[in-house]
Length: 226
Image 1 (cartoon, rainbow, N blue to C red):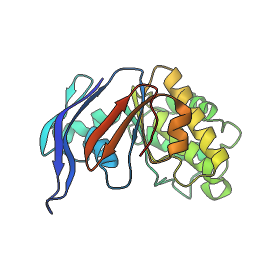
Image 2 (image 1 turned 180 degrees about the vertical axis):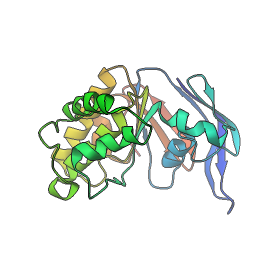
Image 3 (image 1 turned 135 degrees about the horizontal axis):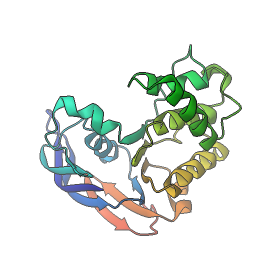
């Protein structure tokens, strides 16, 4: 499903974000990528969505060899993925329903398709009764759930989450992680990037630990010990 082979990423100022890393994620896995700030966690996600390109090595997503993907192919690649960043980017003048529907409208989905899909994904994240609320009327945890719902509208095979609980309290953090586990139970591959030790250790799933741009540990049912 996901394969990184001897991947390095060196920025123009000679900062080495990743150093010759290799790992694979199989279809249906739930994998946490952990490490302290500046260890290369977010760089991996940027490579997976083709926002960044590797300096060396190969990146594969399913049948896509995306190391040198053409710009025109990137939207099709990203429609196979659900992506959630810590920066929510909700549209403040749109309701919950409209924020989620917008992700379908921009790719030309029909009104019937929108009416079918939006209630489904709002139910998955537990916001079926908050469709007419605006972002300012939602808690931080609810806003994050809107973002997750929006990322699910294309029924992605892969779900990438970059610090999705970074600004949340313990209760909301548990709720978001439970939603990610639910998404994974549908057969979707989930890659979680986080520095939250408690979240990772409670998940008891595979953990890839980065330090200084290198993989220092890759364990099934692992823990974040750095």
